[in-house]
Length: 468
Image (cartoon, rainbow, N blue to C red; front, side):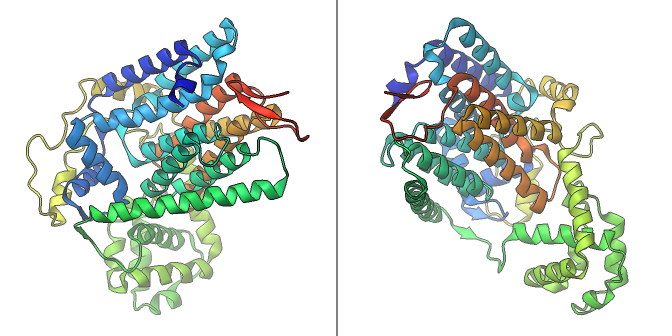
């Protein structure tokens, strides 16, 4: 497999390697948000005190121990550029002008403000997206279910599903794309369905295996009757419903022995569609209900006034997809959030943090942040939603399965945050950005990619499928 891809276009491979090196050097040793620091501590100690899935914490701790600070950031960026190279590897026999155009687009895909800074950020959103990007690129090369490409794609998408819950959406796209590509002679819907079921079974088995490995590294996990992330989303929706409702919620709230006047006043005063963090006083007001009670209250209020819930969701979605120019929504994270150690220490994690536990901020942090601030129009969700639509239309027109899979997977990924999102951080849209660039490159490099309807003998070439 390495020979098949590495020799397809040495010049483009060199371009990708150089861009990876530039990204790593500019962002070294990587940017760590509060979530990233918490996951590093959890992985180092085995004590999981947040609602972040443990797999990334364990990988982050292992890679940091072995390779030092910056190694995990290099790994994340490496996934991105490996995926981009596989997208364009089929252009090895293309003309010089097309290769130059592809090289220019590779530079743009690397140095645009979103990709350049995000691939230097240790974030589960970036890690999950890049895993899926490479898994889709490998799935597009799948011809047999037991091939190296297929098994690697299964492993990567299984990891993505355990890094962030939305990774399961991308994993489904990987399975369907691989199943489709395995139909070298198009044999109809039944054969495709059987291949898809086989791919899904492989992925489920891989996820179960990874989960068993993850449990070995867990010293202690804070027990909760319901997922913490779901409770956070419920609190956000409760406050949103109380903010937008035109009805009197007193009967519903009194069923839970809550003070309607106090809770409605707090929600309307502190609610903001930008993020759940503004609801600092509402969790205290709901404390007596408990986590299971919060979920029941969430359901009761949603059925009590579904119109208010819709208005809240629309307000939150417009902030997630809208502009970041007003400073209310985080476009990117640059630097190292050392204050997170204080937060973790307050949660009772038995760990003594040395001065070198966290990396020093990048020497170029100031320049990178200015780059972000000067490029805020690029951090607009509507822009990349339009890009996904264009990739999808072009993929359907060019009959390119990879471009179609990228557009649909990223669209579903972003759409999930419109339903359950609790903040307007741009990181939730990063997968869309990466998929737009990858989709454009795949369309340019691979051309027609779907097998014909008649059962002819076919074999894969670097530039798509040829028939004999």
